[in-house]
Structures are given as C-alpha cells and as structure tokens.
Amino acid sequence: MYSEKVMEHFNNPRNVGELNDADAIGETGSFKCGDTMKLYLKVKDDCIEDIKFQTYGCGAAIASSSMLTEMVKGKTIEEASKITNQDVANELGGLPPLKLHCSNLAADALQDALANYRSKQQS
Image 1 (cartoon, rainbow, N blue to C red):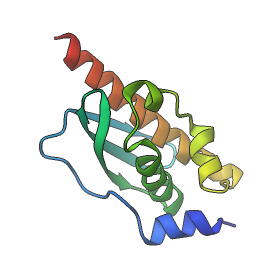
Image 2 (image 1 turned 135 degrees about the vertical axis):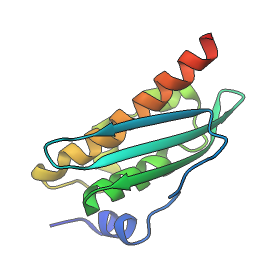
Image 3 (image 1 turned 45 degrees about the vertical axis):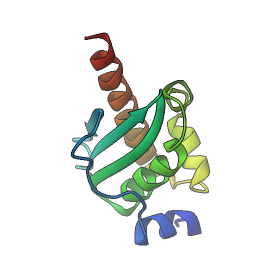
Image 4 (image 1 turned 90 degrees about the horizontal axis):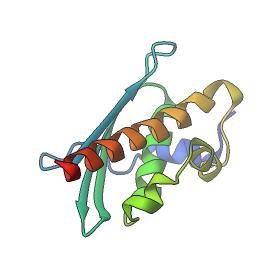
C-alpha cells in the first residue's frame, strides 16, 4: 500500500520538533481526517536554514511532513514557494488515493509558514 520511502519517513521522520527562535510558523489541519501539522522555519539571507515540524496524524501525514522538510531545507523562499503537494507525493514515491490529502496538508502548512514569514518582513 505504501512505498518504501513513505515507510522510511514514517518510521524515521526527519526534522521533528520545534524551533523556539523560528522566523515563521505555519499551521494547517483537516477536520475530515483529524491530521494537524505545524511547521517552523528559520530563515537567513532569504534561505531556509532550518525547518522542523510537529504532526499529529496518520503515517502518510508524518511521512509527508518529513519529506517536505528535506525538500525545503536550503532552498530560497522563492524556490520553496513553488513546492506543491504533487511534488511531495512524487518524492515519496506516490501515495494511495485516499492519502493524497496528506501531501496537501504538508504543502498548505509550508505556504502558511511562507505567508507568515512574508508578513513579518513587511512589518
């Protein structure tokens, strides 16, 4: 049902936790399935220097969050803003149709964090 990459990221998630000195935080959740995600970004010179996540949900949600953090770390804000839910699912080797919303949640949490970062820069 799940690819090896999904199982690897579920069993050994990367970048779990929170950043107390985060430059931006993004949150999202799904009432339909009960999954929630929170992303913390540390940005330096317009690059995402560090990223952590806290996800409460199924294995696909945890794997999607973990994969997203690996995809985003080291990217510029502009590069990160172009990452889609399909990109996350593809990097995981695909997700079952009933679990595709998990990659949506990860991408939505990233977009929320980026919007939070941009709003702080304009203040």
